[in-house]
Image (tube, rainbow, N blue to C red; front, side):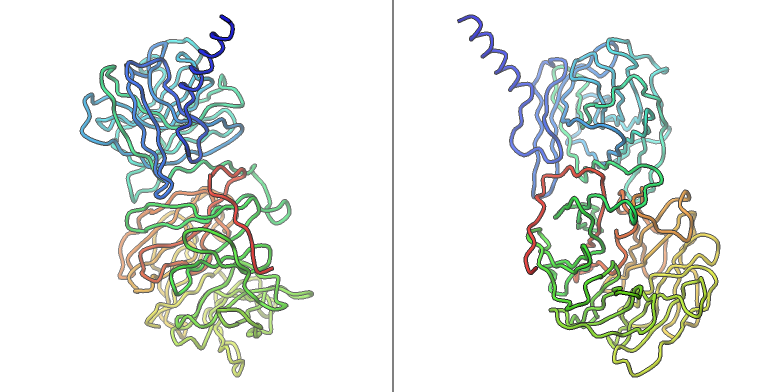
Length: 517
């Protein structure tokens, strides 16, 4: 009988420690670490994909810790990114929130923590071994700036790196620590600590992404595409939502004119999906069924342009009714990759190699097939991504003419070419909002060759006024090729859609069924 009572007590204790509280999003459990005086909690709102943490505890320091922890187990390399915000003024300026990697759920476990304090202090800190005393400043890296909303923690091998940003900024590196004493499999997650045993503090966390990258040198074309997530985002408040995921790759969302559906390419076909998520529905493209990620909808919402290869040819451009039907070939020559429509809906803009040249240039051609293609650029540099403004005054594109890939624009006849962005990043695929006021584009860092836009890199989505001005970051993600190759603005000019990637999927969004096969 005593054994039964003891078992029941342990079972109840385990349930209290590892309470699930329903849907926890990307996490597997949450618990108080170190038996703090006040119980903590963690909840998840699926509608906004936001987490709310409450927790107490004396500190995360010395030889033991007290805090509330929302966690999951992870192995190998990974990138953890999220936005953090304390709720209320708080009591102690050293209340803490952030990301933590932990060898176990013991209160004296080795760990590495990316920490933001209530007073804005920003620190990477660690306990080297289980039961070791954390030391000041030997077990910390301080940053002179503070009050960051975005925190990223990456593990690559044994090296753990912390990065931070204020909204609109590129991520800045706090520092790195060689966490050789952490095991291959660790607990990883969000934490909150009040730094005052008698108080309970609260924080909200959103845009939570757990990305598991591929190995350096991974070739998606040869080794296959990894998991993909379809996301939508309000570009003005930066809040993102995952609406669909797949263990196989898909790419390049377009927003449909009705605002209710998105269009993507997957496994050579074109599909639509509701903006709030749901079943994929295959679009009829006849026998043109080797479609790539270069596709888009005319300004009048009636016609879809697609790029597709066939036996013996590389990509060519076709058009068909938006509701589906038999495609009409526009470009006889290949390779030709569609990127934009003319404002009058009568011409398409595309990039192509011609006359044995290794360089890609920008061309236009009428979709009625009654005229020859017109070459708009004559560049030895790489140019790509031509897209017209809704008023038809300019074509925006990206070019490596000045050494790095930057955003440029020109008039529809190819004249008056001028550079628009000027920074160290490699900027690709400018997309103009339907109201003509904003330009969204993809930025790679300097580790990527200017003429390349590969899969599976840490990249940024940035936004700038079409009238001119400095770009600001609106999203940090793991992606690249296929993320936002084509126009992806919502009709109301408030949202964009894009694709992010991860080697292992980690979201509670169900993989959709597919209809229309």
